[in-house]
Amino acid sequence: MMCSRVVFRCFKAMERFADRLTGAAGPFFVAFAIILIGLGAICFFDVVMPSLSWPLISFPICLLIVLNLFMHYYYVVTVPPGFVEDPPREPGSSIFWATKNGPPRGELTGVRWSKELVITRAAVTRCRKCGQSKPERTHHCRICNRCVLKYDHHCPVRVNQCVGLHNERHFVMFMAYLVVACICLVATGYPHILRALGATADLSWPHRVPQIAFILEYILAVVMALAVGIMVSYHLWTVAHGETTVESHDHEIYRKVARSRDETFVNSYDLGKRRNLELFFNIGENGYPLYTLILPLRINPYTDGRSWARREGYEAHSGVRRGEELTDEEDEEDEA
Ligand SMILES: [Zn+2]
Ligand SMILES: [Zn+2]
Image 1 (tube, rainbow, N blue to C red):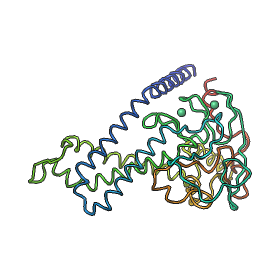
Image 2: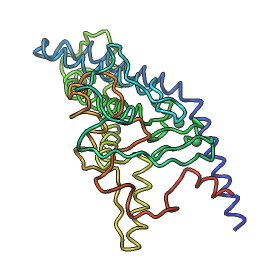
Image 3: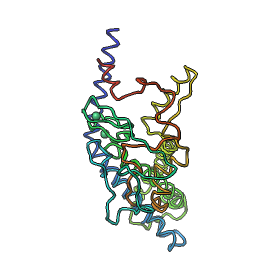
Image 4: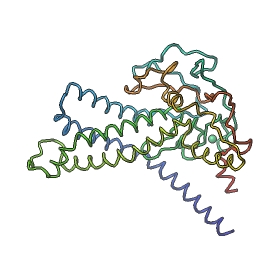
């Protein structure tokens, strides 16, 4: 018993140390990611682009993909995820902001209003770590040491900050465009990689990018297309089910507990796949136009993070009883 407690404390200490380390190394990861993505774009425009047919069509499309990739990356790194102490945000007026379909209406500030949407105020608790009030779906990030609205996860590797209410859309869009860009490079760069590897009779390499750089970027693109492809599919799957990454873990536990009582767990944020996706990307009626999915523009989420759209007839999840909800405090209670 004593021994297991010591081992547990050791693991906790190691976890904290790893948190601090990844927090400190974050800016280097971001710089590294920018260099790799930038080199990928240079490889594409120098080696592959001149050989593509229909340049009047293919060039603008490729440029749009690269623009989306960089802009969404810039947004996900620079737009704060939404800390609970921040005031509700109004959309900006610069050219980087998309314009909404129709004027915003409704009694709740910052919340998208629609006849068919049932939007209810979030239940509020208090965070035992930072003392801030914590609306539903808010979690305390151990690395940022702050409470984040609709916390998804802390991303030290590529983003160096939390992914939450205000940057989650940019995070998913960035990953999606990264996968599209990698697939484009892999598919259209195939003849060039054969030439770079010397597999064809013509061994000349008439490009400014060195052969070795192109080969390495090509391999990286294959790996990234697969790895990020799996990640973005998982994220879109959770979004389509009205969950964040944290919630998808929590809901799995709630489902088991409910099943053990012959009850069914119902996620009250789940309005059906299509609606969940529309709300996440904030498109459709009373949201933003569809073209915001292909232009690298900024948009506000459908809610201020203090109210949530719910399934009709539900005020809260069903199948979870009061006091059974998982909280961020579990870690500390375990230690105590
Ligand atoms: Zn907190
Ligand atoms: Zn964080």
